[in-house]
Image (cartoon, rainbow, N blue to C red):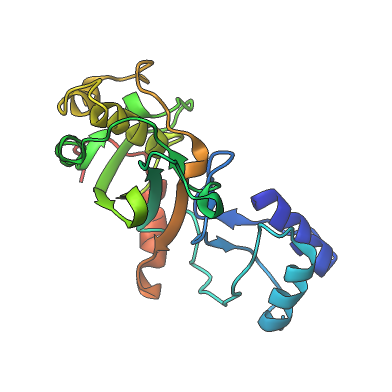
Length: 241
């Protein structure tokens, strides 16, 4: 999405545009609440830009609004938290055809009680190295604020996952581990036990990308944007204030 939108903006404005997004998603992951920022001319007509981009962008990418923000705003580093949803179809017939692109068909039992217990044990600030693809020099300490499961329509289960930030493949790995708990292959304590590891756990399955959607990104009031960005850029250590 970032590359496609950057190219479209550069074409419309007839000059190179540097785009920063709130969160880079794995290939195949969807986003309905992505946020991005770029330095654009102050006199640009926002409504015109939205219409112009709609003509250039592919059908699966849309810019819903363009809004001026304070200079201190940074789509990535100013974010307070990101919210994801993962959809799992547990019905025997699988995902409904119109939702097959964003819903995983799960042909196994799913014990939601066990999954909920396992999820609650993961909440809080931890080193999620066991659930992250390693990036040199990057911290894997994250504050997981929500990990809840609800039964929606027609046998679809939705996982709501929120954190201040996520490392690469973290959400899909958490979901994959919890689905293993739900089908009875692992105990409810197993995902939390992995938090003692300092490297990615090879026995953690990664849930398919298409079931995951970034649905929202939260930001602080304008007066706190710069301080939030500064705090986010500092390397994080478990237990540090």
